[in-house]
Amino acid sequence: MPYRRKFLKRAGYTTLSALLTMAFLQKDKEKEDRSIYAATANYASANTNPPLRKLAAAKGKLFGTAISGEFLQKEKDYANLIARECSIATPNGELKWNATEPQPGKFTFESADAIADFCQKHNIELHGHTLFWHMGKPDWVPYPPTLKMLERHVTGVMGHYRNSPVLKSWDIANEIIADSENETDNPTYGLRKGVKPELVRDLFKIAASVDNTKKFYLNDFGIEGATWKSDHFLKMVEYLKNNGVKIDGAGIQSHLWFSTAYGFDAKGFNSVLKRLNDLEVKPIITELDIIIDTPLPDSIKKLDQMVADSYKRYLDLCFAAGVDTVISWGLTDRHTWIRHPDWMPRKTYRNNPSLWKFLRPLPFDENLQPKLACNAIAQVFQQAT
Ligand code: XIL
Image (cartoon, rainbow, N blue to C red; front, top):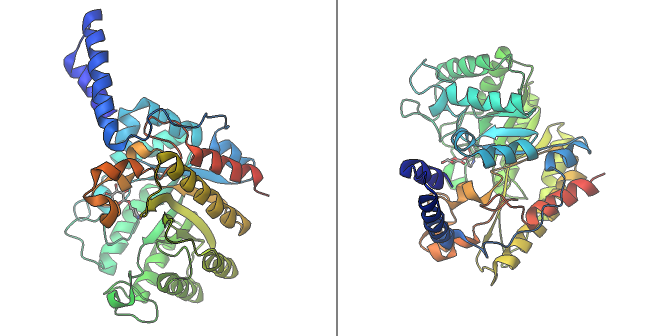
């Protein structure tokens, strides 16, 4: 879409014939672009739903997504969709360390403030993501950073948003549990190499000393079931609680990869949700998207139905466990991170552009039309007790 706007602007066509030519060319360009991602381009479900934020609010819940300042600025239709559908938003990258403190002690908030302004204008809550992560950081920041670096970063960034009317929560730490037992030097908590539990404890305490009015989350992926990672994540949550740390919620990223080859560990996921509730740490869905991996179904319609069914099944479990905040990682397939070659499921998709049309993890398609997944999410909110 942005290319279309640039293309029109660059060409500066004003006469009718030029516009007609443009329209013809554009159709071609659009068709070509959609060829990689296109489902049956006009296949989408009629949007008979009220805004998802409205359906969520009727049940005392929040629904939102990760948003990008660049697209808010460049794409009016994208900005309108976010404003219509979302009551909470997470900056995709604008509050990560490389965006907020690119040089030691030099803080830059323009891009994050623009998102905060958008949120304030549209009555959208802002979720801060994230103050400590092994990615999204400038090269001068080691992993793990020294406590002194963390203290300066947290003081600068959380301090900037202490009186924000929209920012209500932070992912204080993100993805601190190793991906497997071979990648940790801490068998008890399974933390990434070099990360000590005391560092995480002190990080949360520093955050509370700067601004204890926000909700504090520990956020991670791969914990949506009974896994090595979820077991160690829960142990780390318990450690923080036992050390008197303010931790209000656990961010369950929920980047779900399903395939017709394997199901979903509902029993294990329920046990994670129960454990968090027992620890009085609220489970929050922070980065939900649903990717179908091989073997792929034989049509886009079937794929979209699988995605929709998975959203329903997953969110039914979440709401049964009292989850009240659901944030997807993107709202439209147009900008899903999973269509980026760095992030798409390697084996199936990386070298197969002809399959990229199956990368449809979100409620709205690339033309911002609602998909079966959108109807499914609406239905789950409507049926929630
Ligand atoms: C992703 C962004 O969506 C991408 O644009 C960026 O290139 C890499 O990071 N878990 C997280 C998010 O906590 O911050 C990541 O976001 C996706 C995985």
